[in-house]
Length: 306
Image (tube, rainbow, N blue to C red; front, side):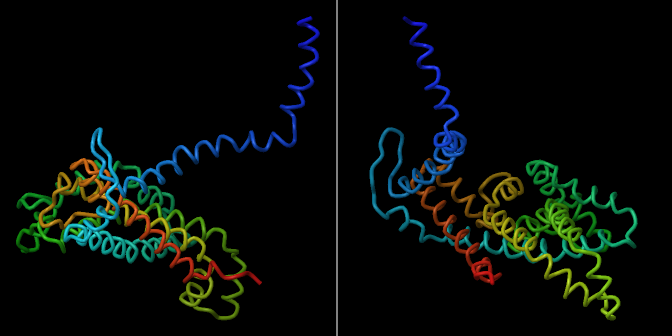
C-alpha cells in the first residue's frame, strides 16, 4: 500500500519542482529573504527606535524628543565637518584622477603598469594602519615626519591635529592618498571604451589636445563621473574611522574631527543611547538621499529619452 502511495505522489512532487509558476518565486526567494532580514528590517527598526528611549530592559516611546535634541552645537559641528570633508574630497578626487587617467591612457606615457600598480596600492592598506601612520607623520613633535620636513626649509613646527584647518587638511590628504588610485582605475576603464576613431577624426579636423579633452573625453566619461561622484559623496558623508584613528578616539579637541557617523557612534555606542543614534542615522540617510537625487537631477538622468 505504501509503495503504491509513493508512486502516486511522485508525479505531484515532480510537477511542483518543475512548475513554471512556482520556479521563479523559488529563485528570487534567497534575495527576498536577504533583503528583508539585512535591509528592510534594520531600516524599519531604526525608524522605530528613533522615536524611543532605548535602555536595557526598558523601552518607551518619547515622540520627537530625540530629534529635538539634535539642535545642539555638537551635531552642527558634525554636519559641518562631514560636508566640508565631502566637498573638499570631491574637489580633489574627481578632477585629479581624471587627469592622471588621461596621462596613463596616453600612448606616449612610459611605465604605465608601474604607475597604475603603485597608485592603487594605498587602497589595499587598512584604514586603521593608514590612519595610524598619518597620525605619526602629522604629529606635533619636532621629530615627526612632516615637521622635520618643514624644519629643513626653516618653517616652525605645527600642531597639525590641534586646529580645525590643518586637521581637515590631514583628513583630505589621507583620503587622497587612499582613493586616488581607485578613481583612476574607474576613469581608465571609461577611457578605454572611447573609440579611437573619434580622436583620429578630431585630429583630421585640426582639434587641439584641450579641445579633444573637453569635447570628447569629458562628455563620454559622464556615466563614470556620475558613478565616482555618487560613491565619493557616500564615502565623504560616512567617513568615521579615519577621524577616529587620527585623534586616537572620538574626542578630538573642540570637535574638529567629529563627523556625523562619529556622532552616531558617540551617542549610540559610547553613551548607549540607541534612540538618539537612530535619529542621527536617519538624518544622515536623508542628507545622502537628497544629495544623490539632486546630482541625478543636475546630470539629467530623470529626463525622458527621445
